[in-house]
Structure formats: C-alpha cells, structure tokens
Image (tube, rainbow, N blue to C red; front, side, top):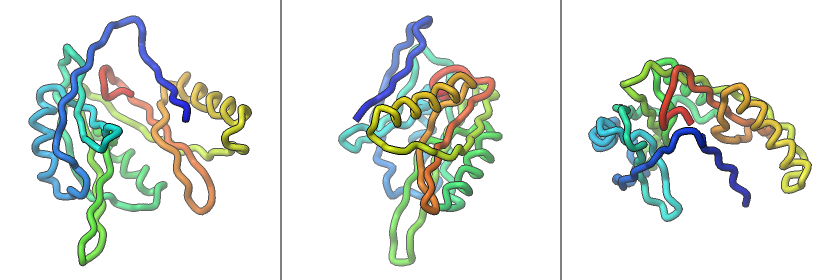
Length: 184
C-alpha cells in the first residue's frame, strides 16, 4: 500500500486531537450534539483511527468554529449522493462521515457534514470517470498521479473512488474562500 501526503511548508501548523463517541450506527440528528460542543472549540475534522476510534482534530491556534449536521443519506447511488454533497457544499458544509444502522424495519443511512461558521466557504464535488488499466503497475501509478496533479493544480483534492454499473469513478472536491483544516 502506498500513501501520498501533502503539507504546506510555509506556515508551521500544530494539530490537537480528542476522542469522541463512536458514530457507527448513529443516524439520529442529535447524535452530533457532542461534536457541536467540540466544534465550537475549533475541532472540525472528523477522522477514524486504525483501531476504529473516532477522533476530532483542530489546528492550533485556530479561529474555526464548526457546526456538525447529520442528514439522512438521500441515495445510495453514488452520482445522486454527490448531488447531496454539492447541495450541502453550497451551504458551506463539507462531507465528514457516513454512518448506518440496521433494524428489523430495514437499514437507515445518514451523512455527517461539517461547516466552519467563521468563514463563508463553499465546496464543490466533481465526478470523473477513471480509465486506469493494469492496477498495481508502474504505468497505473503514474497515470493516477498525473490525474491527482492535474486536479490539484486546479485547486481540487481527491475524496474517494467508487464503482457503479461496472465503471470506476473518482470524486474530487474544491473548496472556495477557504482557509484552515476544512480546506483539505
């Protein structure tokens, strides 16, 4: 497995982390109330650790004041889900996490979004078809990096890959009028 990291070298930034209750299976809007308390202290980035813990992180120092919102996932069809991401992005909310629960009446799916109230940021998500062949080859790695660099040069960050109807796609996010942790 290869990992690609990026960091701005012109400004030293420190990060702080705090563990929060596991969000797995929580699909009710009040599940984010504890996140909102920490969000007002600048904890805006939701991460999962290798051992399944859920943590929030913040830059230090920070002026960020974040609000988390949990909404029912509109569709499990990825293209439609990206539409929900864009609707929320226009309101200044960035995708943070998907959760689901299964009951005797069926499955419920929810999406958690986060917004920094101290900024007027918007987010746009874009889908691009993936045409890579020969996964695991040097050529595939070079093509993948070329795609990431092309989008990166335009200010977009890779979010995820997905497959639908036997085809592969990538999702990229562009943040507008953004500074700080939520921009990447």
